[in-house]
Amino acid sequence: MPEQPSDVAPPSSVAALLEEIVDIGTDQTRGGYSRPVYSGAELDLRDWFIEHATRRSLDVETDRNGIIWAWWNPTGAPLRDAVVTGSHLDSVPGGGAFDGPLGVASALAALDQLRRDGLRATRPLGLAVFPEEEGSRFGVACLGSRLMAGDIDPVKAARLVDDDGITFAEAAERHGLDPSGLGRDEEALSRIGTFVELHVEQGRGLVDLGQPVAVGTSVLGHGRWRLRITGQGNHAGTTLMDDRRDPMVAAGAIITAIRDVARAQPQARATVGRIVPVPGGTNVIASKVDLWLDVRHPDDAVTAAVVADIAGRAAAIASTEGCATHLVEESVSPTVQFDAGLRDRLGAALPDAPRLATGAGHDAGVLSAHLPTGMLFVRNPTGVSHSPDEHVPDADAEAGATALATVLRGLLGA
Ligand code: GLV
Ligand code: MN
Ligand code: MN
Image 1 (cartoon, rainbow, N blue to C red):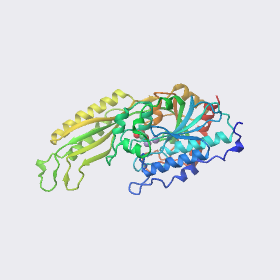
Image 2 (cartoon, rainbow, N blue to C red):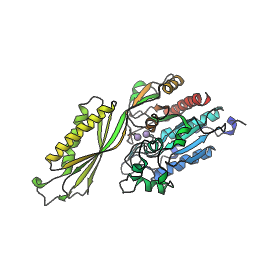
Image 3 (cartoon, rainbow, N blue to C red):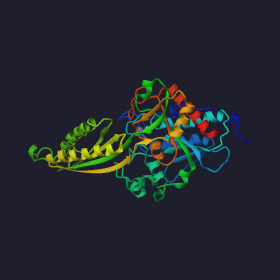
Image 4 (cartoon, protein in one colour):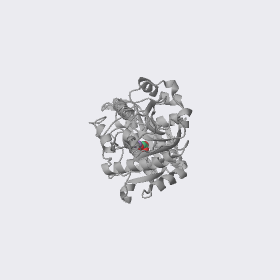
């Protein structure tokens, strides 16, 4: 017998769902939230999601790449050509409350709305949670979706290390995964017919447009490189200034040069958000410094040229300090245009929603190379993200979930 609205619990509000996790992973030192993949905080969030999915009688599984799936399949049809929505629960260090969890909570709230309304879905609906979207622990952005899609060598992924020297394989194993199972998952991919990710907007587009929700059009190409500057570790008191080969001094000048290179290239963004001196003592001249470089531009060839320019300038600057450089590409995601047909469908379902491009990376961007993918963005009045200042008012969060339910209704009922 089809599910009746009276069989299902009243819909949860997004704000109420997010309130339940407000204390998980708070970071007293940095402010905001630090929820790295497979940390205690992220595992608690996964449990929170699984608990909600179970309470809703969804079929829940964690696949061999650590992606959680929760299926609503009222017709009992084979899991093929499903509509999937979801996001991630890991965060950057000291991040905001909404980047990732908003999309997960909205998926639950949208499902509740569809069931309350007695939707007779003709396709299964999947709710998904992707691990290590931020790449904050193991360095590679969107690691879970890349693994599923076969966009990263699983052997390389297994060997990625965190700051404590723990490999991704070890972390995955501690979480009950078999590292030999990492990698392209044809079965998981074949189940997804359409993927729609709702996400907090990470800029000011919707604030300026005066709208709560937008339809995503594109994801800016983004990449990460690690620039190692090698010098001579030595004593801070006994080494005269003229006798030093100090990679921290080179790093300072290189960071300024990186800013200058990006400024000279319209639409380019280049960031050094993480600098790791070794050994990292106050009275120690570092022996080496790793700069983590994030470069983005709409044209992937320009991104490559910007990185090449940075590499040349860094080598020249380092040599004036008696140091050497070595640049390693960690991950690159090309610029993505979302599926035009799906984008138009989302636009038709949400006629007031403007179209918006994003400069942030998303699992939806990775998946869009493999299947029709779209995004919805929800207004963030501060325009700030990857920071505790990121915000979504409750009313906009509800507007987002309702917009998601509207587009899912169209996709599921068709
Ligand atoms: C993730 O949010 C990114 O844009 O790096
Ligand atoms: Mn995100
Ligand atoms: Mn993010």
